[in-house]
Image 1 (cartoon, rainbow, N blue to C red):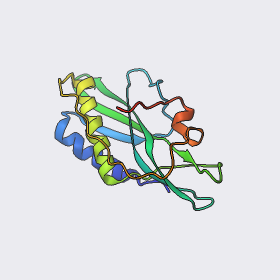
Image 2: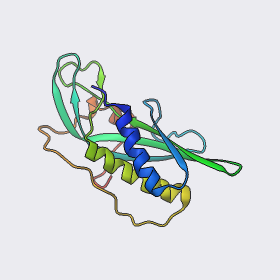
Image 3: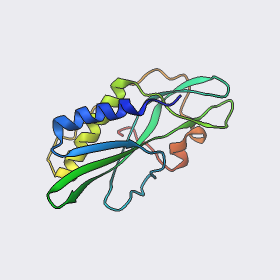
Length: 165
């Protein structure tokens, strides 16, 4: 089941309003590509915990390796500045059906952590602020089986996570 876009947007706007001096908009976009941002865009990626529900066989599962890709840019035209963020939540296939890719459901707490880390990255890359390197760590859950790369859209796209991402 796909998570409402409004929750991501609301959390981002709250975080951006507190720390960013320009107006920023966030869009969920399943078509942005890892390591291929559009001209002028910067890239940022994190992993988080997510749960999945197969719409075909009703199986549920969870993963501590759900890639979230961000492409963002600060647009400058005359004296007006505004920012754009595109977000891709990578999907996974069901182990039983192996058919359709399913969207992750991500807790509000983990979305908040993702947005805090994203805004910190925007401040560094777009506003050239010097900030500490400490990033909020997502809330992990117990997962019954190891990550299955052949079922992961992010792994298929060549995304590999070391322990510190």
